[in-house]
Amino acid sequence: MRAPIWVAEGRRAPRLRGNVRADVCVVGAGIAGLATAWRLANAGRSVVVLDGREPGTGETSRTTAHLVTALDRGWNALASIHGESLAQLAADSHRAAIDQIEALCGAEGADCHFERLDGFLFAAPRTAHTPLEAELDAARRAGIDGVEMVPRAPLRGYDTGPCLRFPRQAVCHPLRLVAALRSAITRGGGRVFGRTRVETVDSGRPFRVHVAGGATVSADAVVVATNSPIAGAPTLHAMQAPYRTYAIAAPVPRGSITNALYWDTEEPFHYVRLGRSTEDRDVLIVGGEDHRTGQGGGTANERYRRLVRWSRVRFPTMGAVTSHWSGQVMEPVDGLAYIGRNPGDEENVYIATGDSGQGMTHGTIAGMLLTDLIQGRKNKWEDLYSPTRLRVSALTEYASENINVAGQYADYVTAGDIKSESELKPCEGAVMRDGMSKVAVFRDRSGRVHKMSAVCPHLGCVVAWNSTEETWDCPCHGSRFSAEGRVYQGPANSDLEAVK
Image 1 (cartoon, rainbow, N blue to C red):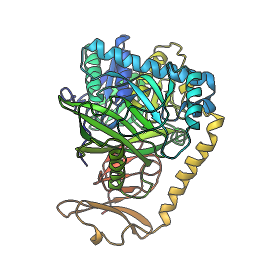
Image 2 (cartoon, rainbow, N blue to C red):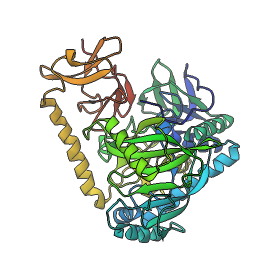
Image 3 (cartoon, rainbow, N blue to C red):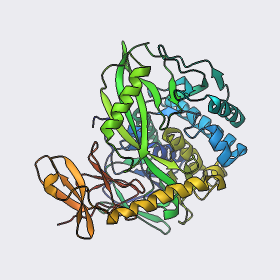
Image 4 (cartoon, rainbow, N blue to C red):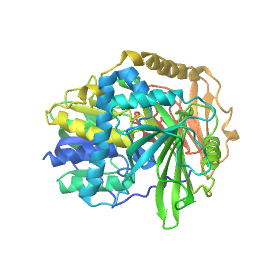
């Protein structure tokens, strides 16, 4: 897989080598974790941030960084689920998050490529425009300023038909924002460590966060800001589902596409933006083709080809694809993130998860909300994002997603993908039945075969092979493992068990 177009900024973070003490330990150095640590450091709290990789190189490096008040679930659906007063609070929070990112980029003097843009939502081909009218009405009731219906999106050579224009949306370079946050945290006395994988969090006063290699962080409060929480009651994992989303990038002549954000209402939907490149070229970034992680049929390469076909119809000046990648979105059953005290845990353990395609703004909201909770202040968004909420209007989707999860356990009694490891070519993986067990088998470039239990150590689902990224993906809650079985992404926090 070709890497995302974003290039990391700044020096590598040090590893945690010894035991340290802090007021707050933040687990996860994506936008949510770093935004929280930055605000806490500004409030005078001592903060330590830990990440199993380099800061920002997880899902933050795979986002297309749309900073929007036009949320993926749509305001008509969000108002139906949460009610109009809470929908207004949601709009207020995402508007505040964009303003916060803009202010941070300005205050730090970092060129994060922040830019305000219009966003255009248009209907799928050959579909009615009535849903757009309902969305316009709901967005206005939620307090989205300036949203309006316009005759078409400003795309040359492609008539979208009537569409909604959302003013004052924005984009930025996500890893430059990560670098700006790291610098601000360090200046405030905080410490950010990379390649430091958290293994366990022991309750008590203080909490003790144990990392691989034996070091420990003692802290009065812990924030778990991993994409899917490595801590948390099973009920929380039952309230969100992991989805893979795909993106491509290709050069276009400068000025051939109006610089804006574009989205459609297809299922699955598409999302589009431009990135900076050279004086005579821009980079067109197109995403979509979402499906449930570890499920959905077909290969990732087929999904990339569909993205290319869709893009060439609408953007005929597009050159050859230079990058393609995928990312993981945690989709909550009611369309909004879970930010607050960790359900079923001690009072001073907090989580941020359920980005719902708005990881940049939901992560920034987490920084504002969690800082207030840790500082003992009331926050007006607390109930809206509470991880213990369960809206009655979301119960149907809650049941549907968990029926899907239950169905994955049937993989225990099915035949394997292959009957013998001899069927595998180099760099291929497959699940094979071995008596009563399921085994994940991978043949590396040298021809060596690696065998692991195919059972995810989180809650016991059977993993599936992701041929494009060469990972094992759990179809239940989104845990991911390297081809050799090393844990790559939670909620699992240990490797696939080796099989002799």
